[in-house]
Length: 255
Image (cartoon, rainbow, N blue to C red):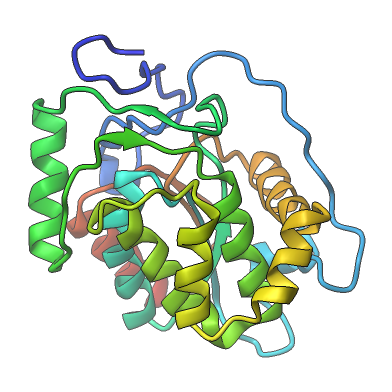
């Protein structure tokens, strides 16, 4: 952990240079230190499509797919929502997949610490340009339960997923609420029209958490190490690249 900023210590990014020869922005969401976690592979009718199908984007609807791994407490993912609009504008179907960037954060969260470096200024500029409210939270939550709730909604209440996910991002980055508080999750789930009894059952029996494990396992098999990450046309884009590089890449793919 960085004692000055209060954010988790960064680890070197082993990823190659990104689109147009650019380099990814430094990411405070990089995991630090070894973490033992359970990864649950797909094995039911509600599981992700086969990996090859997801990579090719050649499912029954024939849509070109982009896989996007995100964490609700990751500031790069918060402002990275704008990048998904770029994909959509170029005719890609974005599939949102959870990936807990910092499982080492305890269930009750921990203080965020000081935020004053150039990286934070860049995030603030990105948020302003995207029209996103940004109020840096005083604490960093454990996002696992919120990710599980969001992924369960994507699988079982798809019409409610987009507003629910957007609300959960706002919980942490705009409203000053706790992503680790089940009552907060319930409140926003209800507003999004999600069946709370069904959601509670999935959270309580571990099946919602298992969905997150499936998404993370898929990501690791495809080279994902942190958030945000996109897989498009078989190419992994790790980290929040400048908008211009996204546009350049997608113009070449759409041609």
